[in-house]
Image (cartoon, rainbow over all chains, first blue to last red):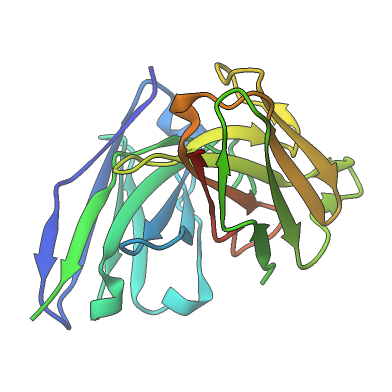
Length: 121
Length: 113
């Protein structure tokens, strides 16, 4: 069965960086991309971007460009999301998610369990 | 960016009764070349990731009970729960995947009356 297992919770200081991992199993990793979605406490869902696990192409949300980098390691079927220059409003649960087709313009049928990133001095 | 507006913000329905959630997009999410609406519905329970219910506006995800149905086209969409069950208490989100950035509605909280 398809599973996305994310790394554990992180506490970071303002200005620091965080890198969240997402290990995929149960499907051919390079046949799909990975989207990243975050959710601030008590708030709605925000799409951060998408990476193709086939060729590494990325598409980032405009508001995060310059601070976010998404990568994949096909040898371990793992996706990574790094966010730099953290601010307090980056405090959120970060989800990796698999769109239900090989394209980024698709609904998401599988989600990781979420990784809480807390930014606090 | 396409703005997704859901209504109501919250909804209290008696067990076994119908629940209806609306979602409006700021521009059409109907792709003319394939006549598909790039609209999905999810539910999210506290402490859990979202779960896909409906995609292409009206296609039910595998394993989703048939009391959940989606309808609409263009800019106006509806999620209907035909007979509310206790396990349906959750926040429901619509999402457009017509163009990036993919965007979500603000959510509708469904509770038992």
